[in-house]
Image (cartoon, one colour):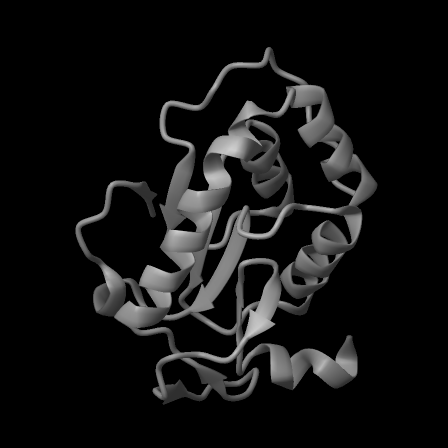
Length: 158
């Protein structure tokens, strides 16, 4: 992963793969340069998450929790209920345990990282992908909330 770290910060994780950004805006910082998502990048991530959300939410909780466990995230099992808003847009990165709970509870996520994404989160995304997380259930963009806030049918959480 170390060799890929700088490359990961120049791409977005959308639809189950690291993809070239549609935006060309860049930012720098102590962790290195990264590409910032634009409205087109957010629209693409929201579209793939919206397409993945119904099938993911319909899976039994035990299956989703099992996938989280396979990726190294132990989550408490809750009764299977469809989430009120299966698609969530967050402008902060959750802690790994919270991420596992959100995914296991049936949410598809679009995460927007305001700073360079920590190496641990990038590794967790790879672990989830390796465990078989369906494409589109988890999406990661680099960017700033002020640049990307828009009216959306998804429930937004900061």
